[in-house]
Image 1 (cartoon, each protein chain N blue to C red):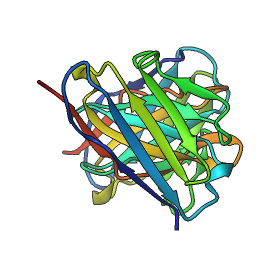
Image 2: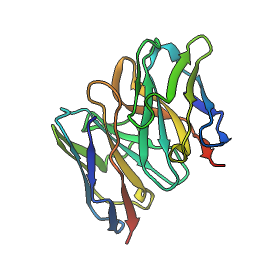
Image 3: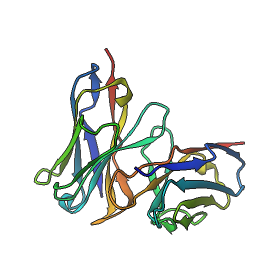
Length: 121
Length: 108
């Protein structure tokens, strides 16, 4: 069974940093592209970032470019999101998600339950 | 980045109704579109990929169509468990794979 479990969320002051993790199990992690998607309270889904299966290629949404860094450790089946210069508008639930298929972005077929990030002084 | 616009943003319907949600892309994306259902407090659930292919385990009352810039999600006969928020997502070329703003489907 595919499982994605996020951790690392919490309360952080504006301008601060936080590192999210996503522990993957039930599939060969190194074969799949991985993504972060967030959702502000009461709002819609916002695409944050993606990393290729081998970690060589990374992508970011405009709102986080230059502040967030996605990475992965295939030896530990773990996805990361290093978040810096945090703002109030970064607050929300952060989900990690897996491509439905190997080497083909056709949809995000598996999602974690999310971790909540609160940005407040 | 490619923008997606869903309509309507809110939809009120009754059990048994047929409903259609539209998603328009700011540029052509071939059939590189997915649809998700999200219920409160839960992560999204993939319903349809490649614009019209039903994800395994999704009821056949859900269907998708379209290509290029205009896409639709249709629920042929609404069931009580279908009242949720629906999102389209484009997966054309490289990320970021943007989402539409969502359509909240409510019980009339």
